[in-house]
Length: 425
Image (cartoon, rainbow, N blue to C red; front, side, top):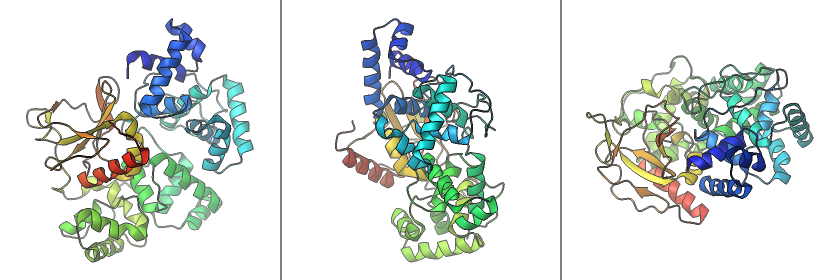
């Protein structure tokens, strides 16, 4: 994506319309429209609101000069409604879509938007950017003014709203939805709404609390428990099973899915899961997410843990990693499908590509439409794990210790390519 295109996107996110952007950059409105149309096609969205959110998520719009929202205006519902403006749906159904996702009446969504637009004078694109900034401001809460936070993508930069975090923490202790609602003094339907919001943010599609908690921990959206209270059963099979506890599948399907991924007999997986459930006490499957949160404390797993950088300070494809390239516009859908099973992803801004890192030796052959393997011997100078701004190479998903599983990645790319019905290269 060119600097000229990002200049247009940056002004769009700051609230300028097409004419204002043209005046600011000294180009014609038709040129502005052409750059916007090109970016919409590049990242695979259909609205300018969704475009701003996608570019913010990818870390391509840093340092925006966004106005402060008046104190007292910005509450939890306003924030979530404004974030909902990023839904990539036609404008006539936008209010209804936001209302359905948040579990509130559409008339309330319309009233919130009318109030915040009138008070700030900001465009919908700018409100998306403000909501994105607010979500990443540490300590930002109800009725608090905006304050700048860490840059998007940095570790711990995004957190849940306090009420959502409290609900998820209670569910992690094994409480049922109704018991958690009683503890929070809210209706069960309200906790259900919190769960829907968390699933929307993480991309988790199943109703499993275990999978949702695992995704929240892995994406640094929820602080992990301060220490691991359960002991891992002994043996390599326990470690192999524990590495797949974040699978985005219903709990009854977990054993069969782990057996497929690991090659272990299903009966053996079921036995290990029973042992883990005993170790988790009375917390049930939700308690197993604690192992995902504290994966770094588990014994090393030779099948998954690999240093990304060689002794010479470089990362050489074939020696240190293997790598697969996909188009940038295919990355969001792939990450949603992967859920908590995602591995590190590099963003190549000049080629508009994403590079997925796998363990060395993982690719015996690779002929998957919509992707291409990177030739052995290619050298990367990897940016720091917490770097997400500047340069032609940055992290879209920082390394967290687990690399992509080749078989699983193959299935994800093939499924997405088939669903899109078009070549991805």
